[in-house]
Image (cartoon, rainbow, N blue to C red; front, side, top):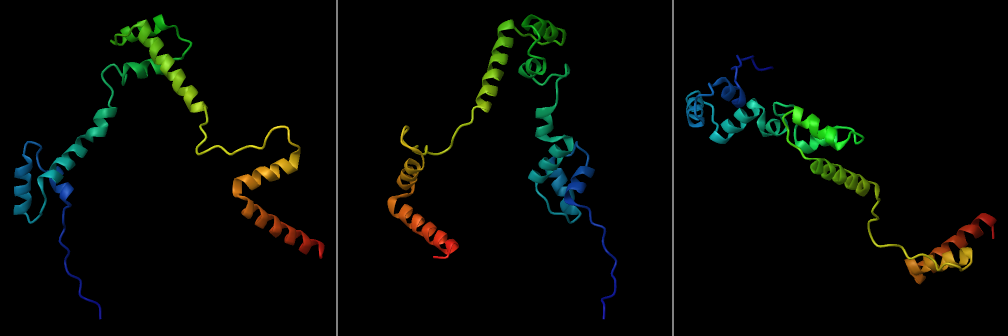
Length: 171
């Protein structure tokens, strides 16, 4: 037999309770009010919820200043590389940024170096010994493989391949 339905209490989440309190209340006062209403929370939660409600630390880092530019370097990188440095300085001055021509060259040079470093593929791990140049084809390759995996393992592999070929040929 099913249980009779009971009236459910409408509970407010801790975060909603904190957001419903005036910002003028201190964290300790919010905790005291919550305790009076039967909600247990601590000051750290109050601080975290209020920071997130304001937009948090991440929002402060990504918010742009009044001129709409995150940084001088971002401004320089945002313009085409074909734009002359003197023109970049003039555009920056119009936005209230102070740059020098040398600064523009430094930022562009660093960007070129970073792009060059991204293009260069770096091999991870130790290099594989290559067969000696000048030795003829398959035999030198077989010797190189034997040197790489070890002679005993190479003989084992060859014996397995010999057996497989014989099975295919029916011998």
